Image 1 (cartoon, rainbow, N blue to C red):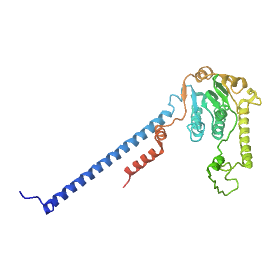
Image 2 (cartoon, rainbow, N blue to C red):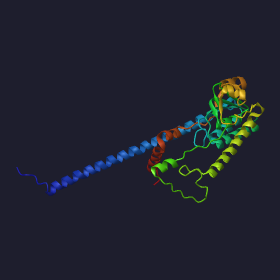
Image 3 (cartoon, one colour):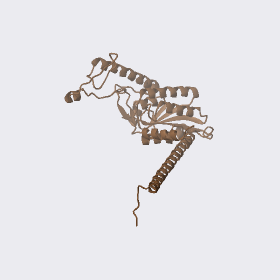
Image 4 (cartoon, rainbow, N blue to C red):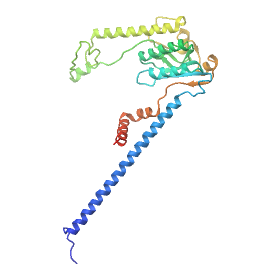
Length: 319
């Protein structure tokens, strides 16, 4: 039997054909995988779009709610800040919807917040006062576990404030906090090299030594904001407020003591107010809720969202 010559033309041709077939099959498999992934992302984002539409529709009061007498509810939960769910944009949109609904007999602010931005709180306070005057509707604040600082700033816009006997209420003050690292830097031999255009541009820089002039300026600004806060509380509470040297010191009290001090009016819950004060037991929630897409973005992170959007853009295009 003769040996097979691998270098013969027939054998080389067969080997080449086999390799070409393998490459072609691998290429086709890769194309199929990419196609499946493109369809996967399309289906995912179509699902997200439908979820957003569904969530939006769920947050719109029904036609029935606009004609049936009810108590309108707006929730204020968590930190009050521009980048949280309890931000002025969300709260103002909810308040306007609640006041404009002809069926809403009154608006209840249910608050459970440690406070936050005086700017965001001030915007909400001003809008509540404007809407009250425009629509001639009462506003009641219900404080749950905590109604402190910027949250109380909003609460005093209400006609009456209701609390639980164990609620934390007050903290009428302003703070600015930070850290100083100059001592640590000296110990480890790190030198701060800060260049500015403007003599005060590096004010309160945590890596630079304390500057009495800058601290005096910052304290004056805090005092001014504090006086604004005090003015809002005095205007909102009026003669009900029993002022003492501690009232505006930043202290907070439980709900029972807050009623004694005139920081709140009565003990009571949302259901009690709807039933006994507003006389409309049906409660409609106007609070702006996060939709599914926003929750997913927060849960999985911006990187996941950016990658998914990029994948979608690369697979859906006009050629």
